Image 1 (cartoon, rainbow, N blue to C red):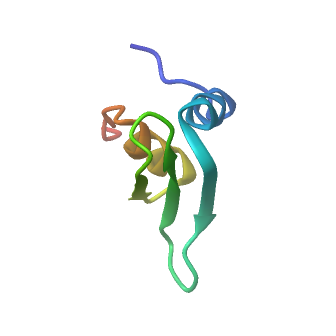
Image 2: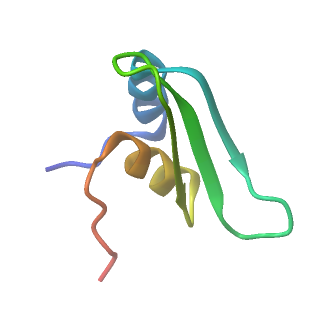
Image 3: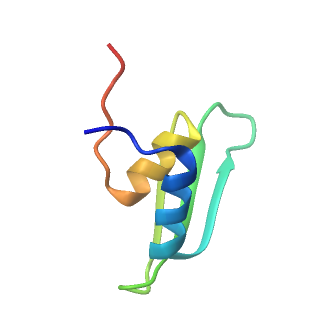
Length: 67
């Protein structure tokens, strides 16, 4: 399966989560993505080494390690 573009990941995440935030953690190399799930009404949070990884983790998209 082809990887989605970062803009597409953002668009999909905005459609599933209210108050979506993706930001770099202070004094860290990691990113955090969080938002309130529209279906369940609960706060979901995920981290990753990149903005893409954080969004993929939040959306439950499997991440393939680069070989």
